[in-house]
Structures are given as structure tokens and as C-alpha cells.
Image (cartoon, rainbow, N blue to C red):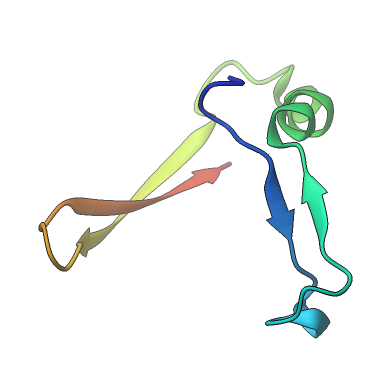
Length: 68
């Protein structure tokens, strides 16, 4: 997971476009500490994939991947 998920910068909606009040979020820690307990009792079907069309330029299929 550490190879795939990098640290990202979270920007509050009221500070959109500004560097002030931003914070770095460790996605791996958030995934295992916050989201994993929600899905502990679920037997399967953790994600929903919605196709949104082809990307301009190389025509690769784009999707929205949601945790259910």
C-alpha cells in the first residue's frame, strides 16, 4: 500500500486556491485506521465502479471508484 498511496495535501473548501490552512494526509494510515473498521463485518462488495467515459487525449476509460 505504501508504494501505491502517497501522502496528499488536503485543502479546506474555504481555503480553495490558497496554501494557508492546508495539511498533509497519510492515506495509508487513514485507510487502515479509519475506513477498515467500517468494513470489518462486511462479507464483500466494498466498492462501486461508475464508468464516466473516455479521457480526452488517449481515450482511456475513466471511472469513479467509491467505497460503499
